[in-house]
Image (tube, rainbow over all chains, first blue to last red; front, top):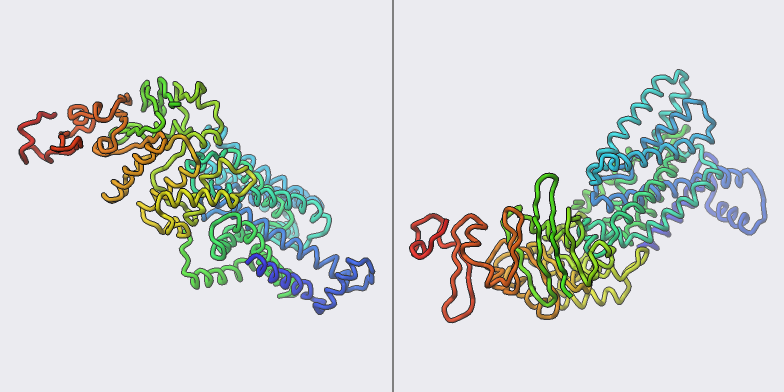
Length: 327
Length: 271
């Protein structure tokens, strides 16, 4: 199963690299990669497009898709709720606010991801510390405080949008909120990739314990699981992962909620299998979406729009075909 | 060694649920906990397994209070069979039972072959090997109860606590669970179970503890402790305990639904 998805993913990557306004054939792509690996630079225009423009985008779409769906799966197990997304603790709202603030103050494009990341982490810290201040540590309280935080933050975003007079500022904000990988570059990837790898590794390591947690707290406690610590690790990794994904791509809804369910159709609920499969599926899905966003029209389509337009009918069909009982 | 519960108090806010509770849980012995709805039976079990903290008092094992034990150590001492739960996500029975081995598995590790062997051993012991690969959500309530017991056994604890193991079960499965409880005690486990049926406490024998509406607990041998006056007072309805002729089986039953319905009325005086 893992192998089949892996091979499919490789073919998708190859196809994505050949597609674009400057179309290449797959053998040229492989030859160029081989040349780059064996260090014989040819440096024609094809290579520039391939390595400077397409490859970072392909890598970014794989990473962001994998990050969002894997943290979705982790959140769903941790909170024993199949209907929540990695945005439960309002990472995206916070990141949105951070990005909008950056755009509003006219920060450089390089600074926007930094602001977005900081905003996302701040939102999670606020959402998790509010229950502590109110001395009520139930899951319900956590969800409610997330709603409170996001209410405030989306109002801040609204105010900024009202105040921004310049048309291109406004459209930059809207575009960021709908998600895009247009402005991706290697320096961003170099920063987020270690965070991705660290969080993904830890999440895979605790995946069996997440199974126990998903049976319920009482159950987990009775077999000696340190619930508070485990939940803390899970939330920290998933939030960090989501925040770094959103900071480079803008907010992309829906993937983190739905891809894990698709994963469960393939391999069941066991997180030791579900987490890697969700990561592969999410990466593949966003790669396809982003490639369509690049090549479908002469201008760039925002990712959230395509995720909804293409993803929703596809998953509706999938649910119909499998006659799924999700809950 | 016994688990010693000493001067335990518990309050939910202003409402005191458990009041100065003292009793022992002994190895190789059954303990049935009786009490009306809301008397704090489940609360007491939750305090013993550590998912609730008592307001005051202590629980002691080998001279140390439970507060000194980490979750892993607790799980090796006490196994817990909750009222049957239906998990949100679906797992196979064997994957569920193997979580009982969690105390022996590191935080970042996964169960190995030997842990699956342990799980299979107890699945076999409960006589449910035909369920091993089935989905936990699709088996019956009685089967789930047995699966949960197998999971508690896979923990290799000294004590097993069961929260209303006979509720939601048909009559045959209730008797089967009681039989399992006694067998577990005979093989060395200290087994604590809560029940709404005083007759179950009589049938299993061993020790009994009764929590009344004020949160006080009385503790003793079930056949001596459980009597008609106490039960009728406890549940607020007329109840009889009779010996079955020719056996030492005592049976607890309601003699009538309204007065004047049958012969026991004349022989017994009840509130």
